[in-house]
Amino acid sequence: MNFNDIIGQSEMAERLRVLADENRLPHAMMLCGPDGAGKMALAIALATYLLNKGDFKVQGVKHPDLHFSFPTIKLKKWNGEYKPISDDFIEDWYEMLTPVNAPKGEDVDPYFSLAQWMEMMKAENQQAVITVGEANELIKRLTMKSNQGGWKVSIIWLPERMNLECANKMLKLIEEPPAQTIFIMVCREPEKLLDTIRSRVQRFDVRPIDSDSMYNALIERRMLPADDAQRIARLANGNWLAALEELNTGNENRLFFDYFVTLMRKAYMRDVKDLKRWSENVAAMGREEQRRMLTYFLRMAREAFMYNFHIEELQYMTKEEAEFCKKFARFVNEGNILGFQELYQTAMRDIGQNANSKMVFFDITMKVAVLLHTT
Image (cartoon, rainbow, N blue to C red; front, top):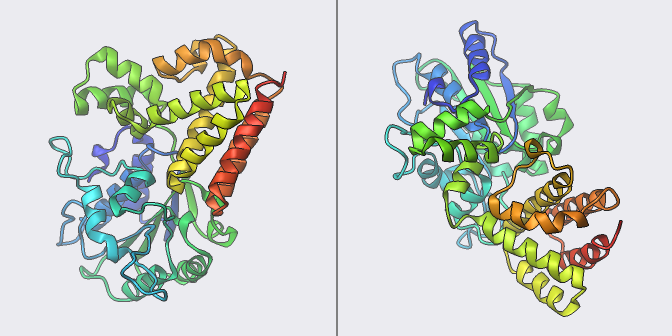
């Protein structure tokens, strides 16, 4: 994958290229930014640029001196002491990055979410982490000489998913890096990383994709009519994954929308029996899906609040969501918007810490019932 294959991000791509050409790349760097902005695309393009200077060219995403680390799960076949490593899932990883149904001309597709990766691993209700086993494996590989006598590149996807033991070992590796090694961290939530790691890497903030690049990509890569491309580009708000979601008629957000509407209606009526049934249904989801749903609820609270200002440029909703907000928005106001935000954010944290899902979501239903009647 080359820099020219990235959707938008021309300024960041040029910045990285210049740093590479002038031999000024930091040995440890972190690409931070929202989902769907192209962080992994930039990381792979930079790795390709560095490694293709040798005799052995990068084939898709495969090269003997390109190492990927990413969150994994523990399969039932492994004993209790085993620490999974990325190589256990490397074929799934390559399949995720080079899907057989990728659009013509796209040999690498670096735009995917944690949810898609979890589905690829068949994670069910597990939470994916980067274990100390991966840190040990990476130390072993990077201390060896490079195959081509040039750079060795380590791309670490979602380093915030490292457990504490792994993070401490990675810190030592970053502090004392092997010769001609570049670490590229692709990070979504940098605040969850150890402060000591954050202080030892150079951060590059990747902005959402600009509207023109999104619009052009939808036309050129997905063959959309101009009107549809313009509507989806605006709705996606710089997130290529969100744009692709809109193209999928059975996308997950429609399910989340139904759950959101049901919760708001039953909570307003204070129908405790149905609210209990709602919380039990949601509790049966996997934890990662629950967190994505709460993220969706958080967005819908914001959209409903902003709808009251009647400024179209501030609204990023589907037609179905906007129709619902015509009547619902008046129930989200200055008196309760912060309460809604705190409620969903706290629930996301609790779910991430393996709290009892039934208790978390039933608590949400009760508090939503109170907030909807707060002015």
